[in-house]
Length: 296
Image (tube, rainbow, N blue to C red; front, side):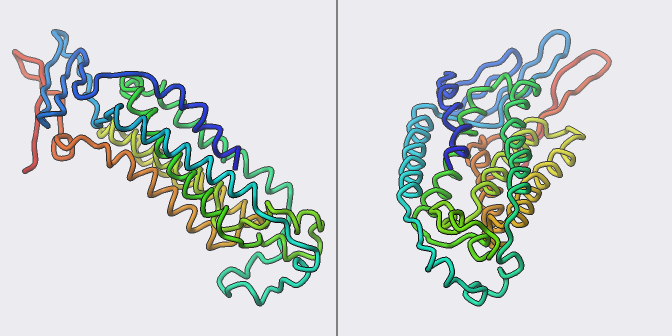
């Protein structure tokens, strides 16, 4: 669980990047959040820079993020305080005790697949960081993106850690006769519900796709970005399943929670005016400017 919190804690310091609370200014656009209006101008050479589709109020969002990190600390404390089970308790566990829909990987134990699952897991954290600096629109609004990312991962981490700390569900590997007894009885093996790696990967990946799509609504890369966003947590979930770390339902729930958080946190910050407004370059014989369409 500590590994899940590393990206959140590292980025907490970056969240101090400060922008104006209700007024965001770029070379070509001014967004006035108080009036919910979007004013667009353009430079002499016709260069267009989109205003941010998000509104982040740092006086509100930074304290929220700090509170969420606190909930993560509470969750980690609960996880660390879980008790080991005895060898007799481990031996008494039977496949019949598991719901029928989760019996497909009862007893699975594969450390090599477990280790392999960390490659797409860590890749999902690197991806949004790279995008923040590769995508010019995100770089110009870095404070907003980082703040929303911390919020996304902190919500996911809090939901997972507190649940894992309160719910006792042995991992599939605990049922395996070939699993070393120290692994079967460890408190770490008593928190199968729900799949934290899958949830964190989904949250990070879907956040990246959502922000890229909102920042680049006309990009032809959007389908590719969404396919990658859906594929990374699916791969992690499959590997966690095959390694005996989580049951099918643990992974499905983790995927759903992570994906929902990754999409809904940016959506919550979506500027009201930009939800129904589209802006595009407009060129004519004697002018260069912008066309703005608002859907009522």
